[in-house]
Length: 259
Image 1 (cartoon, one colour):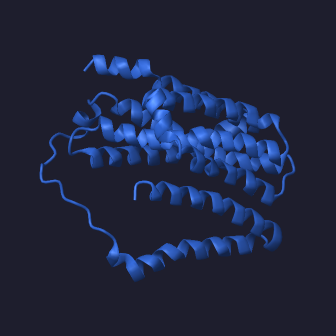
Image 2 (cartoon, helix red, strand yellow):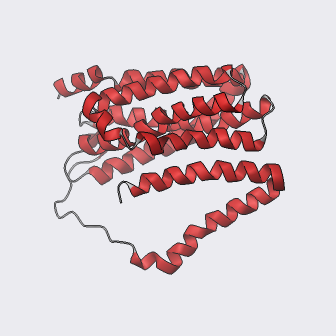
Image 3 (tube, helix red, strand yellow):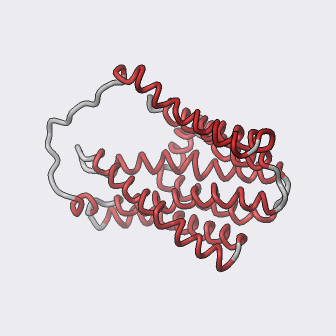
């Protein structure tokens, strides 16, 4: 189940942009919205028919103690939360501004869909070798490298105008931003959380993620209006560089020594 869920998520992110782009070019925006609505209804129907067959969770007999303050006091939790917020904000900004940039340089909806599909497609490849990479570089070092690779790709993105080159850069971007960073952040969140409180830690992470997704569009929308489209890629690259600096092993070692 742990390997199937990320693969299914990546497959959905790969197929979605392709279907949307192709449908917009050949059937119009209205039909594209209709197809998306139909796909969105499918999970509800599946739950109605087979929802009772889903496995139940196991209750933890050891009661967890302490509130959010004690959870945040754990070494590494704040660092992982900050990295997670930066990563998800960067992903959202890319998915929003990449189509805007593609439209601005005259690409068709199908071309934009191909470029966006290359982004999650990278996760299929990198997750086949992720354990091997972790065994060589360790989680924190690999996460820092993934952030820096992402930053470089965001800087290079506005320099290209062809579907092929943008798809290549989008694929490499997905290697770091989706394929490596997301699973490693989840692993670090589990490993840094106290025993019996991993679910609470993941819930706190989702709270931070939704808060950044609430605040991000307002802040970066204003930045984009003030400085222009090109600067949005630069701001995103700067944010990913901050995530790389935050994730570097020295930060983790210092946090562990302060415990």
